[in-house]
Length: 156
Image (cartoon, rainbow, N blue to C red; front, side):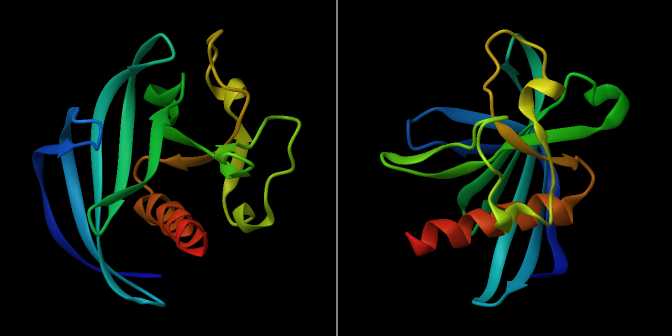
């Protein structure tokens, strides 16, 4: 995967989810990306949303208009700038979270920094899941995770 160019950037990007809910992202950046299967449009939206007991930074990565990766801010986001995305694995009923600390993190995630979600988010309702860690400014990592998830979905 190679990021070729910035196509667009702006404020107030609005996305309508299949559920019918509309979410507004304060900022977005859109890139032109080349992968093994050709050129793609990748948009990264930045916003906030209440999750695990507090308003958290939210980052969504769309490839060709489809959301492939979602990230949320850590408890110490204001200091570290780090966001997390739960690792999903194939289960008997579709995708399920990769359970922390019980499941082995799939090898295909070895290029990413991975930590337990409950280590970075202290809330009684937090999922016991492994999560990819990225800095919010590391767009290549955000895009790489979305591309990996896109490939995983295409193989199903």
